[in-house]
Image (tube, rainbow, N blue to C red):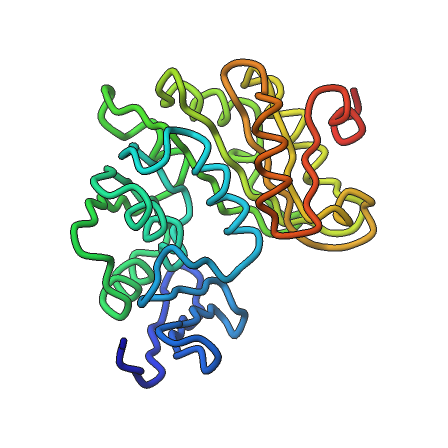
Length: 262
């Protein structure tokens, strides 16, 4: 059993907001990271492979398909949060080598102090802008998954929400590597549509994975975009749809044209 802890707080200088970590009263071993009063991440220290937020579970399911089950991978996280996915990868793929990029130095220090990573985790942290970090990493580094979790609404940073950045990220992939992007958007899905079009200029194929109702464009929420270096595997569509969370839907190929203006 993981001992519960009191609420912890840290001031983040870059954003001028306070981050808090407090126990989740509904989950044994669970903690919630909030920034500026808004919930950002959920971590289960007792079971790091148990992901609470639906959009992060969907990303985890894509990571599951990126390499044979249990095989260590190299992963790059652009936007660290509470390192929920880094914990998941270590729990499901022990021995993986991971890098996490975060703009807020205090946030990474705070999270790693209050919510220690699973034993054996090899995580290298980088403080700075995601695009600067991509170009600043050692030239020989390549990743099986690059996960971008920065966008939250229509005010996405232009130097990241573009095909040029996606090409730079794609150049960091191993031959089997995939680029996974969480896009939080408002009704109408303006940002999602622009990012599908941008990602299609950088990757051989693209898919979108979300709760089925998100594709109506009526609701705010998250859509997971995945860029592959070859044709999108039909078996991945079947696997992701089956794994959920439900109701789940995957769009690829011509079915995705409705979100790209093609």
